[in-house]
Figure (cartoon, rainbow, N blue to C red):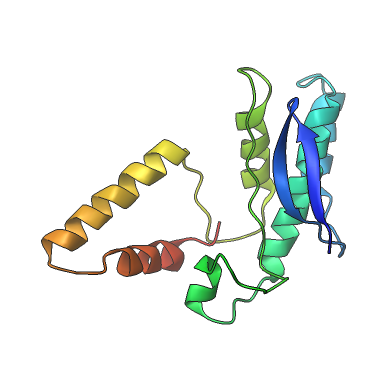
Length: 152
């Protein structure tokens, strides 16, 4: 499949492969309801981002890795492996709101909403604890702990 590049928040921010399966429009529906209620103003860039997030939700829900470490294999040829989405832009463009919608609408049971900085602090804390216990390859058990607790 051809990579999809979407211009969102005036920058190229999403790269990955588009999933053409059935899409649950719950995420888009929630966004549209908030527009109709007057909580949000329509924004075409936000809508493009929501479509990409909805596709990602579907990919995550149907993805079955061949093995635990296949999730982390950057050079894998597995075309079904979900591609991440990186969203950035100016203050007040709706990035956090979109992530909140994405999180709330996701039907994935094992999920956690955490800011990237907080997540990385926890990873480094866990790595430090593992190294104090003389675990030489600390990344593996830390990654396994995260994957066992959350899928999203």
